[in-house]
Image (tube, rainbow, N blue to C red):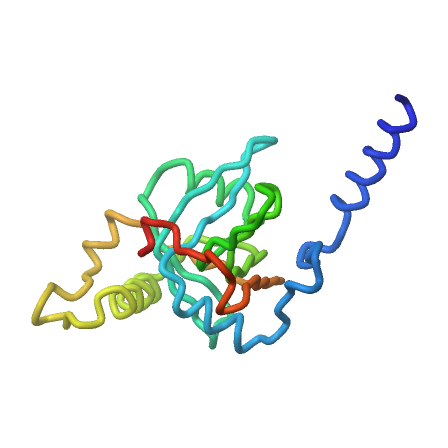
Length: 196
């Protein structure tokens, strides 16, 4: 019994100390930076991971990827747990995922799912300058409501609007990406009903 516990502990430590961006299954890893950037551009939402002391937290947000700044921008409430966590511990991770088909198998444990994913590791900060916050928020509007025009369909973002939200920038330090897909003609492959 003791030997199996020791073996498990060694395996746990082995994986815990790996480099942040190292994936466990290299056959799924995507290293093509253009692929990674394309997923970050088209991703519909992202999940922000923060921590306070020993407690992790997740926050799902709309976001933009700014290639020129190699950064992720998003916004949340002016005050709250996300902001407090980011200010107390600026080391964060951010995940973007797309789900494809469920790939069935004869054994339940061998079922799989198609996906594309990117995990970003970096440092977050609250943007202080109004013009930078306005620019990031307008880019968010351009991504999610590109068919609507500021000044015509909605009021342009004003300085007084920034009193109601906080804009954040994640400076990307590392990233990793994975893709898993099945054959086009895999028997019985199907989309999760909510995605159809």
